[in-house]
Image (tube, rainbow, N blue to C red):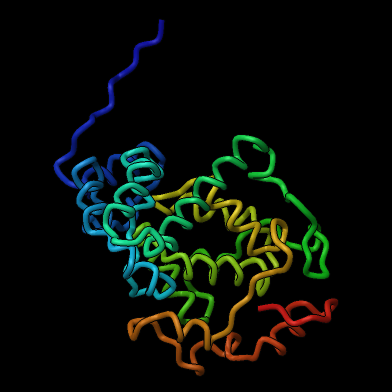
Amino acid sequence: MANYTPLPKTFASTEAMAEFVATLSGEAVAPACDSASSQGGRMAGEAALAAVDPVAYGASRNHLDGAVTRLSPYLRHGILSLDEVRNHALAAVADPRQAEKFIQELAWRDYWQRIYLAYPDRIWNDVEAYKTGFDADEYDTALPADIINAQTGVTCLDQFITMLYETGYLHNHARMYLAAYVVHWRRVRWQAGAVWFLEHLLDADPASNNLSWQWVASTFSKKPYIFNLDNVAKYTGHDINTRMSDNRILACSYEKLNKLLFPNLGPVHG
C-alpha cells in the first residue's frame, strides 16, 4: 500500500501558500498574488455579500470602476450559493425590479451550469460553426507568446493581461476585450484562450468561462463580438491607457474593423 504525506491546510500568508502550490506544480517562481483581492473563506464571502448594492450595480456594472460585486470566486468555490445571493439582493431593495439586472447576471451563471450538465461536450467543442467567414481549421491552436507575456503592443490589453496575472480577477468587459482580441484579431481558437483564463482566474469555472468565450467567438452566438478603442475608453477609468497612439489597431470604426477582421462577411459587427 502506498504511503501518502498529508498536505498542509494552513499557511502563514497568501504568499506562503502560493509558494507551496508553485512547488507542487513544478513552477520555479510562484505567480504574483494581490492578497487584498483574494481573501477566501465564509467570513470574507459574507462580508463581500453584505457590501453588495443591487441598485448601484445595475447602474454602473458595465464600467470597470463600477459597483461590481466580485462575488464570483465565492460562488465558484461554493462559499456562497446563488440562492442566498439572490435573496440578499431582494432584501436589499424596496422594489424587486431594482435588483433585476443583478439577478439577471445570477441567472446567466445558473444557465451556463445547466448547459454544462445537460451538454458536457459543449464545454470544449464548438457548439456551432464560426460565423466569421473562417472555418475552425483556419484558427491557430496555440496562444502567441506576446499575448502570454503581456507584450502585444496594444497597451490597454497588456494592462488587462497584467491585471489578470497580478490579481486573478478581471472585470467582465476586460474579459470580453481580451477574448475578442485573441479570437478575432489574432485568429486563435477560443479553446486556447479559455485554457489561459482557467489557469489564472480565481473564479475559473469551465461553464461560465468557456461558454462566454464561445459567445465572443460566435460558436455559441449569432455573430462575433468585437470592440473598438472608443468602447474601451467609455467603460474604463483613468488608470487604463486608451491613447490612440498606444492602441492603434483598436482605433477604428466598427465598419472598418468589420472589413479588416471579417473580409468574407458583409454586415457590420459590434
